[in-house]
Image (tube, rainbow, N blue to C red):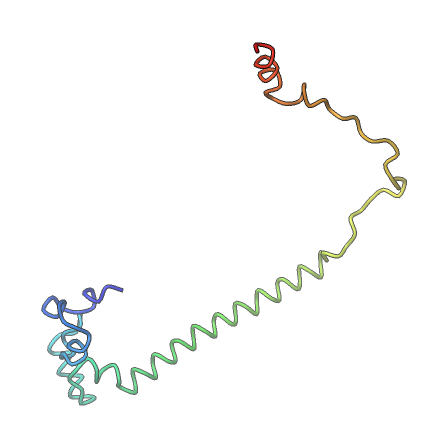
Length: 130
């Protein structure tokens, strides 16, 4: 992530320590009025205090767990689907073969490589020229 997209222009060249101690309105999209309301509501003035606010941490944890729960739900659905397919079409089923075929009595005709190969005439012509 490009941190410059998260902070106002005036803070783009600051270190992370300087950014953490910067006022909340250094964050892009947070106005001075918003920062004043956050100070009034939660008694915070810096980005570090905002990040350490217990309500922000709780909200972050809840959102992360919700994403993980959705992921687990998707995995469970996938497993159930795999099991249903396996029950319908087991991979251990033997391939159906006519009962009259027990073994191959005569080997199949072999195709001559000389006439079958796409470049056989080219190779022969090159050998004949020598």
